[in-house]
Amino acid sequence: MSSTSMLFVSVNDRCYASYRFFAGRLAEAVEKEGIRAEWCYLPEGSGKDTEAWNRVLQEVLGKSYLAVVDFNSFLPKLHADGKNMIDLFEAPFYHIILDHPLYHHAALSAETDLQHVICVDERHADYVRVNYPRIAKVWTQTIPGTRGKLADTPFQERKNEILFCGTYEDPQQYWELMGELPAELKRECRLLAERMLAYPERTMEELLGEMQGSSCAETGEKWKNVSVEPSRKSSTTRFAARMQADFLADAYVRNQRRKQAVEAVIKEKLPLALYGQGWEALDAEVQGRLSYENYVNQIGAYRFALHCMPGFVFGGHDRIGNAMSNGTVCISDRTGYTRSRFEQGDSLYVGYETGQPESLIERCQYYLSHAEEAEAVAEAGRRYAGTHDTWEQFAKKLIMHAGDERSE
Image (cartoon, rainbow, N blue to C red; front, side):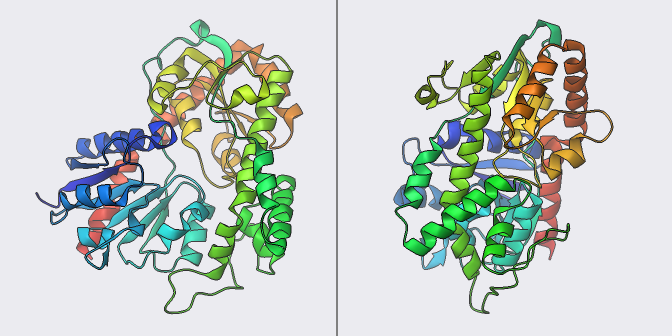
C-alpha cells in the first residue's frame, strides 16, 4: 500500500452514528481526488474496549498512509509497545473535533508530535493553539452538509412544519451535579454557567479567563490566555485542565438553551416535527428517533429545520449545512459566525437571538405564513452550501495539508 491511501478510523454508533456518517462522506470525497480510502472499523458493540481497538489496529499498522483520520478520537489516549498508538502509524494523524476541545482534554494532552487538530470553530482552534503546544498544527473546517434523498422536493410540496432532531437532557441534572463539586469549584462552575447564559456572544474560555484574571478579547482581538503558560516539558496548560473541570457549566448551558427553544415552539403550538430521545420528559409529542443518515434523508420533506448552536460563536455546525444543502430553511440562533456568513446580501437562514424565545417565535411565525419569502431563503442557502460548503472542498484541503506535511 502506498502513501496515496488515507486511513479512516470509524467508531460504531456514537451520537446517532454521526461520526461514521461523516467519515463515509469525507472518504467518498477523498477518493474522488484519487486518494484511496482505507478503513479501520471497531467491531459493533465494542464501545471503548481498548483491547478490541488494539487488535483491530494491529491489522493496519506497518502500512504507509498519506494521513490517518478520526472524529472525536480517543485513539491518542491509547498506547502500545511503549508508544502512543498514533505514533505507530508514522503518518500525520488528523483529529477532527466536533465540539469544544475541553471535552477532549486527555486526547489533546497526549505526548505525541503527530497529532493535528481540525476544529469547527475558529475560537476552538485558538484555544487548542494556546493550551496544547504539543499539537503539530491546528486549522478550522466546518462539517459540510449532505444532500439527502428528498433534497429536490419542491418547496411548495413540503410539510409546512419545523423539523428538530436532537436529544433532550434535563439541564437541572447538570446544575445539581455542580452542587456536588468541592465548594470552590462549585461556586466557579455555577457562576460561569450564569455568565455564559448572560453573555451568549462570549466564549466559555473568555469568561473563565476573565474570572481568573486572564486577558480576554472584548474588542475583537483573538483571545489569549496569559495567566498560565505551559512549561517546556508540559503538553498542556493548567488553564485547559481547569476548563475541563468546569465542563458541567457548558453542558448545563447548551441543554438549557435547547430546552428553552423547543419549549417555546411547543408552548406556541407551532407545527413541530420533533425527533430524538428524552423529549417525553417535557410531555412533547415525539415522532421517534432517527439515525444521522435517516435524519439527513428526512430534512427535504420539511420547509424548516430548527437548530440551537452549542456555544459555537465563531464556527458553523453540520445541522446548518444539512438544512441548506437540502433546500430547507435553517432557523438558528445568531452568532458572530452566522452574522458574517449568512446575513451579508441575500439572507441564507433565519436567525433569532440566543436566549430570547420571543425572537425565535416571531421569526418562526413570520416565515411559516410567508411561503414565498421562506422559499427564497431556502434557495439562497442551497446555492451557498453547494458553492462554499462541500465535502469535496474539505477533502481537497485535507489532502493538501497532509501532502505538505509528508513533504516536510
